[in-house]
Length: 199
Image (cartoon, rainbow, N blue to C red; front, side, top):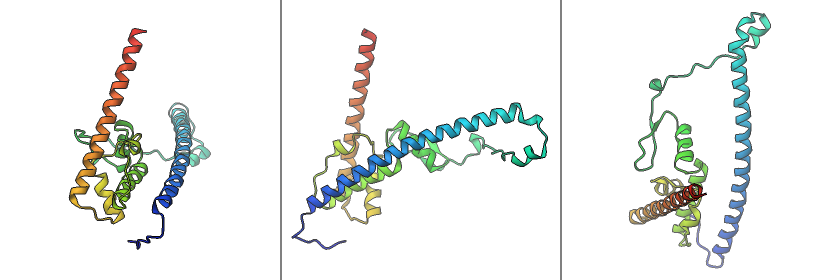
């Protein structure tokens, strides 16, 4: 751990770093969106190629065609996939064969953001707690629904030793904030549905 210097204003330094971090996160989100757009285009091209291959390409026996033929990827059946990754959210019993699939499930079904965002948010909370800085859970968890155990994991990754009681309190506060956000969203969706029916 770095040595504390009483002459430094850590709050100003931390705020500056936080602002820089937010700017970088916004850029990452822009890049992520453009990446998704490119992936969709690639998927469309691959689907068109598959369609062409299945309907037209089988009739072409030329050497050039055989040379350029893309190796077909053999998909596994659902029963063949070893599902070793459990969804960490309470009440969700989904299991996945890869971490990537589980992360996609967390992002889409639990509004947990991507893995990087979850780790950064959890580390931010742990760092603030260790430095006795104020933590605004409601602001931090507006877009990200942190799964249980995130704070403990972040504490281990940062090698910051917080007491079990503190970790339990932080986890409970995260859970409470997430639940409040979920109920608020559900209420808003219900109100929108009622307005739509009345119109």
